[in-house]
Length: 451
Ligand code: BGC
Image (cartoon, rainbow, N blue to C red; front, side, top):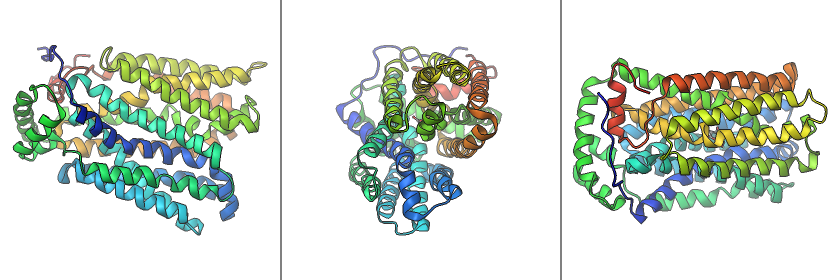
């Protein structure tokens, strides 16, 4: 039996919905900003706090430990207390984190501050995609959720830019303190956005759900949507954690892990090091080249926003991961070739573009839509727990790998993982374009998944 597709005319969203997306995705901006900001001020921090090599590494990676904790705790809380309250708590973490980062007097204080910010980033990574998917009409859901990735990439570019402009001696306090502004903006504006209608329906607040839908959408399809969500929730709760649900969760975990182990953050965190080591650019222009990588990441995400609801999730994922594989092979071989420095630079940019049209945004889209509502927060939290954990492992091991295997073999190793990722997507990820979240839930309950 084939799942019913929602036919044209597609649902329309209201201008208020655009405001809601913007507000929710500020969390994405702060995610990107915090992740990328230390790459440019690391040496200054090391001087200020008199750090050894290991302490420097820990200073970067403690953000990821915060992310792991935030992701793990946020899911069950989002299921219990709702998405909106958690978004407010999220903003509070970002505010406290930014104040403590800018005023830290000692290394330990700095670590605590960065852990708190990381916790905020972990919360955001779970909450924002779920919230966006739940407020979006099915035909635009991919786009809505991709905007979150867009905000992450904007956060990264702004961090690179701010670094290039202000990262000198005491400037680091200003650079870190700047994140206070979007965090406060998030806190104030989240008060104005509605609770997720799906969550309200699950908790039987039908009147509030209807109010939220009527503000978000111009069409009236949501009226039938409410009863559809209600009956799906009832069926899901009855099923609890049956084998189909576990299967979906495992697929989500797999995709979430692949997003990290295909190596994106080796580039995002270490681009200047890679460029200097491969001799692609001089030390001075390494920051500028990094900025170019960040901009490519950001612009290519626009392609995903444009196409994700037209061509679908699978095609984008497959094309992007294919491109990432080829780029990593080129990057790996470049250091073996005479004059391969330019190839290194170009293939790094091509790799990032591949990621930005596929695993970057589309992972969030797929994760936000495949989990059944009654465990959505928890499952997303678990998927993101592994995402942050593997982010941590990759970041921690990358420099060691380069040291023992060299740049070439390290990138060829990541290329191999990309091939595994391609096969995983090809065989296991179903197309979910244009289907309502409730239809997707049904799609996964069929014995044999149609992909
Ligand atoms: C990933 C991050 C990565 C970023 C780069 C996100 O989707 O989760 O780990 O740094 O993309 O754009």
